Length: 192
Image 1 (cartoon, one colour):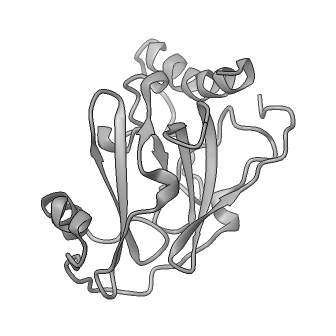
Image 2 (tube, one colour):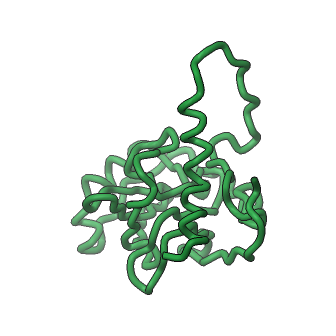
């Protein structure tokens, strides 16, 4: 792992660790950002993609159960069904479903709300979140290595994508045309 990627992961975790160690007391409520359901960008490169630049407004009010047309979808039918029952949570009309696959390991699927089609993006077969620790950002632990929201097509993967020689760090993808597409990030100074 390169030092820069290691620092990226640590920089993501430090603001949250510092906030947790502050003494309790009366505090003014923090202003709610316009994209409050999306993860904070703290510690990411200044040129990091912003969720607001990849808008995807919700269009469906009703959603259907996942279609178990493949062997892989049938294998994870319980998890997919439970996640879809909560409604779309990603890219407007999709549900990003995640489940643990071992110690500090996450697997995902994306389910279309309109027709129940299940996608298993090859770029995110397995995500190792070993260096992230137990910080969950207020989300279920199964989403530990993922930063996403319903109002945006952008997903940030924090950790290491297994296969292909990927290293620990933050990788961005945009959901379009029923697939994830890598969003390159120019190197630059961090936002500190």
